[in-house]
Length: 612
Figure (cartoon, rainbow, N blue to C red):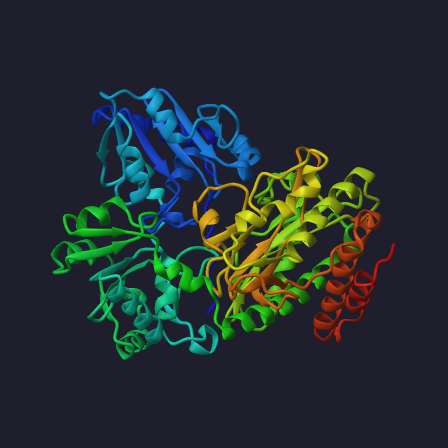
């Protein structure tokens, strides 16, 4: 069973502007002065199914992060630095790009507060607005009106993609590491300790993780649409479309004591429940769910499953190691091939497709973990660039090439970026690449005490760039799921506090996190070096205090191109790390390439020790 990847046609600017006009006509008829359109679906997913891509439909912007606001005479799109270049290209002249995070650019809430009066009405879809967002909107001096069904669905009409209908399947304990019954019992014990009757599980990856189930309702993310209600003293209930549940899955759920109910039955169940105290995560729970729980006592706290899921068990950790070795062999085959044929008019799409074809031959492969970012020259500077036949470039030996890719396997999820230049890079490119590499190595070498957050470590990855006035406009690292979403919380490594969890959730042994500093020169080139790391306990020379110390284990296995490195800029410690890493790549990857002498020789050349 492989994850199905869905695509849809590209809308033209005129079609988008017509949709905008139709939405405004609805707003005028309903006496709504502005309508808020977040990116998220009813589960607050980062990546959503085509069926839920309302913001993309109305604006034309296809990035994963952004919020649209349509008023009677303005259309505004907020997004962060990862997507500035992409959004500027995709938005029609009818839209204004709000470059979130830049000086003098207000947040969407600030803009509403400044530009809408107490007599103005702001419309929202209660099923896609989180409780956290709802609270912020209530603080504004503007009337808030729930609008359901969502008017964009009416505007979208018959061309709206159908809702996903792929089957749910079991994720065996041989890969999950822990039976679902034990996860449920652990959660129920916590509810008892917290003196809470019910916990409503809204996030799709948490539902999948809790019951050891997977699906393919969202491209690249092995999840399915469903909610769960976990009772402290009764059987948990999974709310999902019964047509997705085979007899085998139904029998499995019965065997672990889980009841089944229709997806759309959740709100009625909450309204009629005898529970008096209900726990919801305000960042995952929608306005509609909150209103169904009220007027009971509502405990608003982060989901306990998020951290439980983020700390991988020994089976999952070993799976992550092994899937990254297999994945590294595919990436090395690709880079070796590309080095030999780059003069043959290889396009960005051709390259991405070839890399996927190497991965498809790997054991336990399920699909890609995200759209491959395959950017040559100036396209590499678009942080979340997705090549297409209309805009792609041809790769050549005169430009840098950035490829950020990953895969889903039964035993883990990968995410790796390498930047290469198969010709003669400029001194400036070498200097920038080496500074990114220094940041990568400094973070990889970090040893830190219990309680340290990724936010505190972020500076290690940036200091070399900062010293010459350079920087990058994205976070340095995110958690990675185990055959789940490639972006996982609650932890991360970032200077940008998009979620307070980055500042407050400490790194713990068993967590996964990426290490991906970069540098992007608009209209010229982009650089990123990304490995997945495991957080592990670390023995230190001294034992200050009573808490344990930690370090990182890099599990991504792919050489870093030597011709882009100014070795003289590295310290002895950093050079040792690089040589040790390449020795590890050779030791783990070469056995998988014994039947491919050309790639094996390429790997040997790429892993040779460097010296001053």
